[in-house]
Length: 391
Image (cartoon, rainbow, N blue to C red; front, top):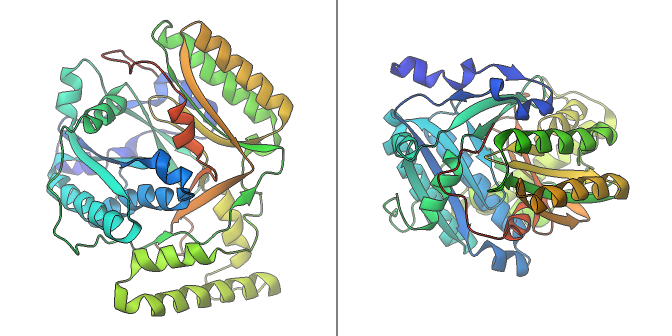
């Protein structure tokens, strides 16, 4: 496969619009030969959460996506946000660029957020040599945004190798900064409307078949779909117009150097004030429609995904949660799956908005009190090895 087709691979993956399609193996396509996975996660994220710093953890995870996509020119490459980490799949021709972006993000996370970001670049060939694969599907959260779903066991294997200290990346010099243009952290926590915000991770167990796990995924998604708007944690008209001062400060630190941060804070606050005024008065400013933007924030939000396992941060009532948890526990008892589930009162949103004038802005959702990181910590037992996890 030539470089041009490599660059256009993800754009050519068929799009599905019903999230139940994550369990359909026909929606997935193998990554082209010669690709790489650029990935990262926070070391000690559990302690950071205990210290009340989960928004910083989310910001660090999203910074990986922002840094890498900005470095490669924001092309249409598959990625996934995992709360305390992230992964981007790229052609090998972009490996050097990806390494530099990862190293810069690592340095920024250390110097500005006081956290340790572990980074790695794993060749797809090494994954396939282990009898695993990386297959990608393309789910349309809205008419303007699609998100990648990953299957085949390869991303999980790559993450384990990274945590073992393999496939590391040379650190960047002190003071190196990534290009985090568009990385945003302005919204206040979003309160549950149906009952509770629940972060769920379900991964294949050792005793079940791929078909049994796919059936479990389909049942969980179907139950959550019974809830209003599929248990979407963000209101249909978008988050309430309340903005976090801490979020503004985080965004300013991410997108401006020390000497210019006060200007950046002022600019962000001015943008917020203008957005609130336009929304209240129902006035458009050129191509920018504040009310439509809020609705797009909701539609574009990434609150469900598949990354070698099901991950959801959903807003559910007691009845739906009880049914979901019963399914998960039964599947775990039978060896079909292992799961973690964390309940909280609100959700967090971290955003990647290259320009508010375009409707393809992306919004990453996680639980506000530990979310995916706490759910993952509840999954006990040895990691799967050499097992094909499907779809």
